[in-house]
Image 1 (cartoon, rainbow, N blue to C red):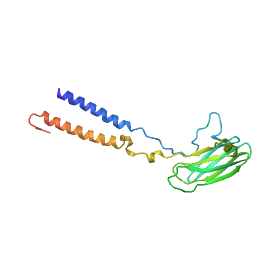
Image 2 (tube, rainbow, N blue to C red):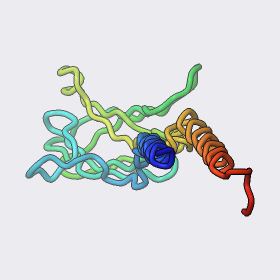
Image 3 (cartoon, rainbow, N blue to C red):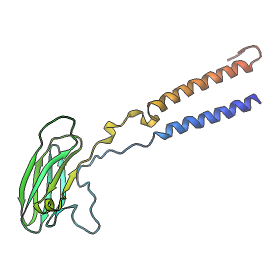
Image 4 (cartoon, rainbow, N blue to C red):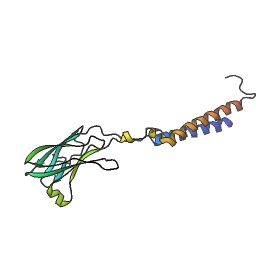
Amino acid sequence: MRRTIFALLLVVATALAMGMGASGASGAIAQENATNTSSTQAGADYEEVVGPNVRIVDWEYTSGQFSLTFEADEPTSVSITEAGTWGEGSGQFNYVEQVVGEGRSTVVVPVSDRDGAAVGITTPASMDQGTGAYVSIGTDEQADQNPLTTFGGESGLFTGVLMTIALAAVSAWYVVRSEESGVIEA
């Protein structure tokens, strides 16, 4: 009878420990490729509409700069502002205003080389509409991720360790208790 109860308690404790470990196992995948990461609209050969006459057809980020390829129906002025993840405080950012000609044009914009680098793009027509477009490399979520997330965070890890110690103590107590005169042979 005691062995059945002990076995049942062991199974329940094991199931709880496995559940705690699995609860924190879902992690975010970091974005590694910083080229053409925005979703292309169905049936379109461009990535993002900036204004009524200007579209971003391709872009690439290499350490410290964005290379943006525009397609314009007529010569149009575009304003490109550095955006992204900034820390608290003050600082400076890059701003480029350039006329893109009819057809395809490429504009290179210097930006601060950091996690979450991005640029915001507008045209006079998009400003009148109160809209604009942006291109971003995203953030490296794994860099900010707690390495103990796999174990359910700090609480899950320490709970698992304490459960293991408690189960070992209960098992040792049971072995000593089940012997008639203590442990005879190990």
